[in-house]
Image: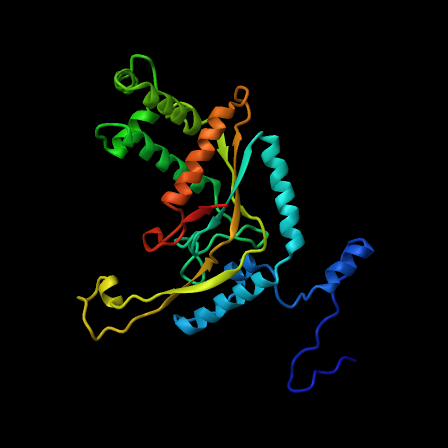
Length: 306
């Protein structure tokens, strides 16, 4: 007969359910502390404590994520890097590395239990989405082309370079008229832009892969301190009697190395090393000059060449 555990009327812990796994796998699974998850991303999304609007409790929840990241499995990250390299190689892509110049905030605007978001891969490591990297590369490409023109609005230039359609369409005619008036240098960049990023009628020929950490990254807690919370909430005018409300959020430590890659889209013609080189250069320069992620105006999210 099972007896209650001492110190109260708590029920005894039931015997673990026998897992239908090989003996070695069962032993490895049993060696883990199953009382709490070890994946920082899982803790951040599902297991942080209720903080009830209290900044101190929220900070404690973020600290749990930071501690889990310090104990992350380096062998898992190494295996992920090898798998990532294989996928890039299969896409006949080019790999380059950069390190964060200062702290990096990825996914701050995502929904989550701690109000301020963060982008984790399912393995529990920070990841930079390829779609965001492509956006940075495209923004810098537009800037580079615009600098070679007497004057141009970036939004108009983006629409012009991405326009496509039937030969007699207004968009196509506008592009051809603009194209015929440009220098050889601008023409070459314009055609590279359309080939790399695509148009309204066709996908780009390149693929921007998610960027992953080269080694175990260190996470750090940072804070925003709005001095006029009622004013920012739209309920009152800014006044000295309003108390600051600290907002804690996660960042990646400065000098963290990330690996980036640009590959060739399947089903396209033979890869052009010139286009891949151009895509890499636009991505690399964009990441160092305009940065990515949240709070770039405050210095976050910029990278340095290695």
